Amino acid sequence: MTLFFSSLRSAGGSAASFPAPTCRSCTLRLAASLLSPSVPSQQVRGKKKLARDPGQITVRLSRDVPGVGRAGSYVPTTRGEMRNDWFISGVAAYVPLAQQRQLKKDKVPIIRDVLFGADSGKLSKRRQAQVDRAKRAGGVVTGIETDETVEVEKEILPGTTVERVEPSRSQELISVLVPGRLDFARQVQSAETGTIFGSVTTADVAAVVTQALAHNDEASRVLVTEEDIIFIDVKDEGGNLAVTNRVKSLGRFKVEIKVKGAEEPVMRIVNIVSQETAPRTVEAATN
Image (tube, rainbow, N blue to C red; front, top):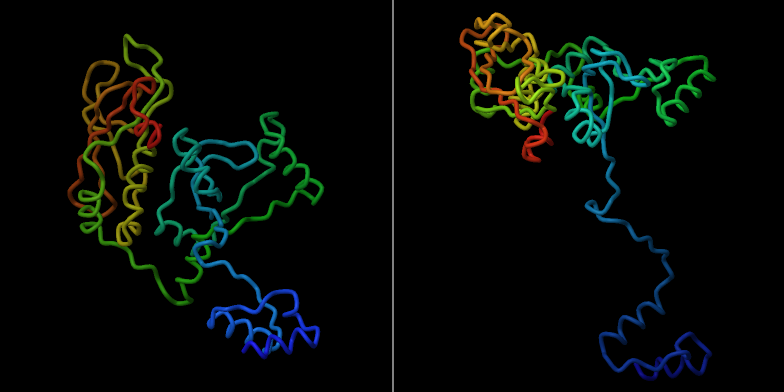
């Protein structure tokens, strides 16, 4: 092998720029690289190192949002925006996977209407830029497919139907997976009366229930809407106990959760606390 490197030096080969290696394994590797044809190599990132798409989800707007859409419409947003902003501030509610499949089946558009509220003067610079581009394009707003929409498209084939969870089984899953106490943090309007700004509605409770069910494959197909939930034994203005779809003060309140077709409701406690004194975990989870 020493003779090999000596011949390279005498021939003016590339080995003339470095001394002959003394390690046998190094010598063999270097000789193989010099004798084999040059093959371009490309470094490929491992699967775990590939840049991840943050992904988008479909949500239902709880109120009008300029540059996004009207209350009740279904729009795409990023998981981070929903988790850190929209959900805790009551802008939108999560949409269970089963309902997303039904939306896809019914061909309900999942789009942002960037022209909505364009004349309100409340649009951010980024939203206003989107509106201007849409107007230049003739006022046409295109839709954005979410990751969940793509998954639904793959799963639902022509002539197939989505398997729904039976009402009795739905109630079982709710009773097991939904915590006994659902905490909500709200800003206090009056410390004396305990009244809060805004309210906690059955739609808010449905969103929390849906989020609790979303982590289980079977439970994610359970559809819980605000019509399936009711506050009970809430004192009205006359001091009488009544049922209602919203409460406007601090305290603990009973709610009944009963999906359509179920016989017995699941009882849970809604705990409304002051936003100023609430633990961070409560503030991050609900609002």
